[in-house]
Image (tube, rainbow, N blue to C red):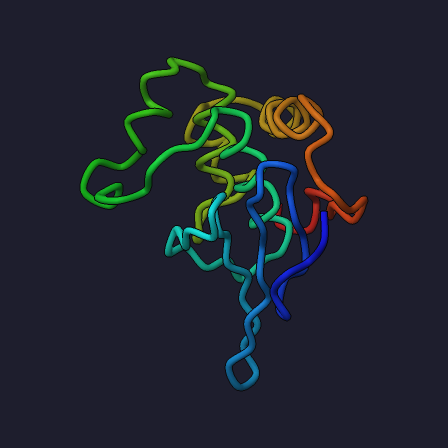
Length: 137
């Protein structure tokens, strides 16, 4: 897949991509869904942005609109899957692997396995530059 946007740092087979944005000294990464739809989430960490993209693909996409009021997007909550919820929480701004493990009262290795499961479920990235999850633990 060819990079169409100047700031694109990763593209996915689904047509989604991640863009790198710089404002002063701050660098953020924003996920854009298929058809160039901005989800409105910016990540300070490239690894979290990639994991978020993996999760979007893993569940077939989900909508973040109003999530702040609900806590978790309904499509994710309806899965009933701790794996899906663990990965979603691990991508959130103030959370990570350690926080998610405490929230689920589980060892960190369980959260890491959930992350690996979602990442390895399919070879989605057009580039082999997926960051290590320890980068945001």
